[in-house]
Amino acid sequence: MKNIYSNIFTFNKKILNKTIVNLKKGKLVGLPTETVYGLAGNAYLKRSINAIYKIKKRPNYNPLIVHFLDCKRADKDVILNKDFFKLYKKFSPGPITFILKKKKESKIIPAVSANLNTVAIRFPNQKVIRSILQKIKFPLAMPSANLSSSISPVCAKDVAEEFKNNLRLIIDGGKSKIGIESTVVDLTQKPKILRPGIISSKMINSILKIQMKDRSRSLKIKSPGMLKKHYSPGIPMFLNQKRNSGGGAFIIFGNKFLKNKNYFNLSKKSNLKQAAYNLYKTLRRIKRLRYKRINVMKIPNKGPGIAINDRLKRAAR
Ligand code: TXA
Ligand code: MG
Image (cartoon, rainbow, N blue to C red):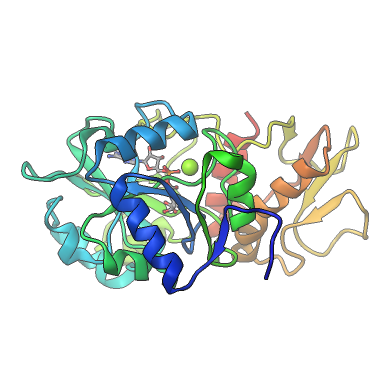
């Protein structure tokens, strides 16, 4: 299929090789994952890491997630513990990121984790990125492929829209199946959720047999990257609205509303997983349509709803 973006490529053997050559050389590549699209660079190469922070305009105190094929490869760089193995067995590869202690002999560039002695690691579950990880001897530092504080991308076109011609290679892997970023869980001490996601605290608790709570609203920012303003469409946003006051776009949920061109339904079936999948797509659509105000109705704060409300709150700041 031809597209209007000269930097988006369909995945095939030739493009796989081109991707590998680029990553080895320290160039950045936009890659699909099951959560959101990522901006990938060689985690063992300083110039790749510098380039990631630069093109995203990301503050250097906000660390990156390192992506591995499997735990055998991650073992070279981080200290894997018991809690990790229990969760890994159940949820990886998949939408969960583990914060672990870095090994002294690790080759991961310190700037990847903002000079902390910990590293965030994830094992993505998407066939394009897995076939790339399979073929390279270094892990991929990979934040979401958006400008800092902007909306995360869920398809190749979104990535192209974010970086324009500053990114020469984006691999099209279709729409991200999950649509919001991975759950981030700190396992360096008593397990703690730093960023809620589709894998909930409840699911983690049942595996680890603990009673960890969800990150509460008032909790101070523990992860340097838990920036308060994030995922922002750059339009004033109002949460927990009962009606579309002031006009503009109205993000709704469930089947209680009549059809209206200004209404954007996250899930007619009131399915929170589907709502998470539609969230960034919807925000980006509203932005493209140049609305001046966004009202959002109350979204149930349970299961995936916890992650949705976390993103909405920060998008609305
Ligand atoms: O689903 C995802 O996780 C996507 C895809 C591309 O894998 N990636 C992603 O990366 O969302 P990013 O950079 O947008 O978010 C990484 C989050 C940030 O909140 C950051 O602060 C946190 O992970 N993080 C990274 N390393 C950390 C560390 N050592 N300690 C605490 N938090 C860390
Ligand atoms: Mg991000």
